Image (cartoon, rainbow, N blue to C red; front, side, top):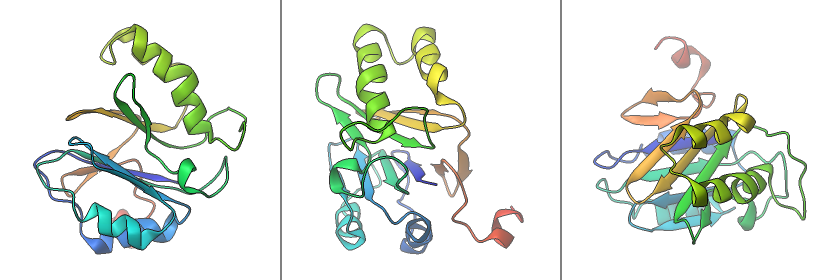
Length: 178
């Protein structure tokens, strides 16, 4: 299962040991975006770490580490996805009831066909947008970011001042001793 890590502005990035544990469980792609516009999507973990090391504590950041379920393992299928017109970034953890088309992930299809059109018509902070998200979300977790504003949907866990879409990467004994 993928993992989304949301690092708020003013918080240090989790250390390499934590990133390595997440990557060990999600080896099919790595990506991030920041409130200042930095971003990276790659299947090369070392490239990802090098670029992620440039993220400052003052920047909000969404990190996604992928376990492929829809679409091939390639850079273009790494999250987060971006829409230039609305200025939103999007990452997803879970599986959506959407068939892959043209090697696109279920996540990107949902973002491009459902969320972007909704964001063009309504505020992300509106009840109407919540309804659009909840029509498809199921048990998935989503993260949207525009500038410094990050919006998360689903059951995130707080750990070390960051938010994680799951803690499956933590050793079992540690996870349940919290």
